[in-house]
Length: 246
Image (cartoon, rainbow, N blue to C red):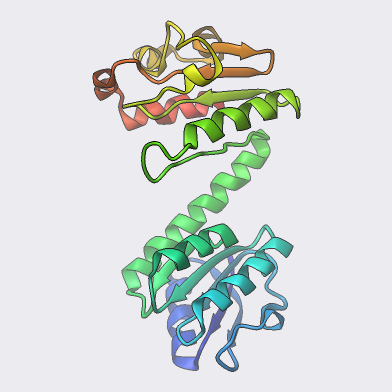
């Protein structure tokens, strides 16, 4: 992947260049940052590929805001940030800005290597997703009762009714999933557990026969009614299910 590097000094820049090159990425630009702030003009020419920015002496929130503005202008750019302080507010702000990876600086070589592997994989997955022309939207709550199911079911309903999008809702809260009760009188006779028991013959037709038809453009696959039922579901089976859906 074509990679841009922005570091605070030549030593950091050379270290990043060696690690990135060792992972098979092509460094197309490498700059030493001037001053203790990240100015958006420093990012000129870094519109595509991957951008790695060392924010060691920069105020993290200021850097994240600048990077977020740049990502909004260039959505195909994959960004990794290296920051000296890991705090919840900073990580949440980085996630909302669209920064894909955040590492603590000084970063260990193996941590940077793992992050580079993940970014390369995500870039490949995103390219395949564009070919398939399908989208996955995930709602993940920090704790129970925070309203994730309420938001997710209403969002799916709006996509189906207001935007005429063919929508399928997978309730992957395998312990306490109750999304079916938000959109109908209760779950369908078939649920994710029943479907994964037939994983070897899972195809589009079986999936269509197993979902709860909420509306003309809105289907839902329920979580199991009994929490104990989910212990038979393996990660590989869920991956196969997602592949059929998308």
